[in-house]
Amino acid sequence: MLLSKSRNSPDEFGKYVCFPIFFLLVSQASNPKVIMGGRKMPRDEENAYGFQEFRSALQERRLRLLLAGRSGTGKSATGNSILQRKHFLSRLATTAVTRACATGSCCWASWDVEVLDTPDLFSPEVAQADPGFKERGRCYLLSAPGPHAVLLVTQLGRFTAQDLQAWRGVKALFGADIAARAVVVFTRREDLDGGSLQQYVRDTDNRALRELVAECGGRCCAFDNRAADGEREAQVGELMGLVEELVRDHGGAPYTNDVYRLAQTLGGLSPEERLRRVAERLAARARTWPLAGLWWWPKAGLGTRCKLGLAALLGALFLLYLLCRRRPEAVTV
Image (tube, rainbow, N blue to C red; front, side, top):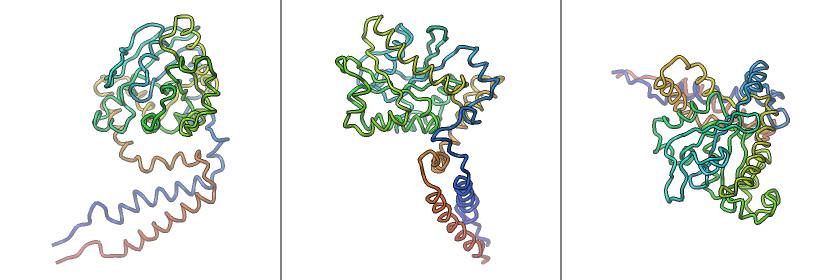
């Protein structure tokens, strides 16, 4: 009888883990162009379509805003404030009110604005709530070809571990580069009592909150979703000023990644088939999440020595894999 190799054989370990990671780390450590002042250039292939697409986006005058954050922070109410009308279901409740992605549109200045409200897609419980990645796939399709800004909604004075988990969920779903398109929107602006939001963020004892705002480029604003029309319009104007700055910084191009690029190629298919393809891609990405962090290590400020040290460690593992291959792979009895 011939005993076959197991699925977790040394061959597979080296082929699919050690070997790719080793060369990834070496290429990052030896390539000074990976980091460009801590941010990607606007025309990087991951975050831009090219000059013609930049010009087309600016001529289109369309903005896509995606609301994100944990449940109960006022995402839907913030969306209604932006739209200047009650469009999304919003009420005080002990459980999540928004159950599915929904869109609304309005005009602001010369822009056509599309707002996407989201359910609880960013908490650790999303794996149980959306096991087939269908709702997360709908989120992608409804915001394709990509959002110009992600509005991370949190409540003033109540930034908790759940908010931080939601932010991590946003990056897990869209990629770490989404931070370059994020604006932190605080609800309950009235609790500032006329004080400065910037001073509140600067003086808060909540280190995680300060680090979050810094990670999002310092972009933040505050909303009182019960304010009168004039004050509410001024709040929206402040937010849109931040969004317009993002649009200029990225040449008019929306955020994109491999999933958005896939969605762009599926226009001729039925809605059901498009959703199935996107959900499959998201599921495949989730299965490879342990390796995903390697792609944003350059942004984390790791030095060349650190990268080379990690490469050496993985190189040693690869040598161990080669030694393991010398063992008999099958035994005849």
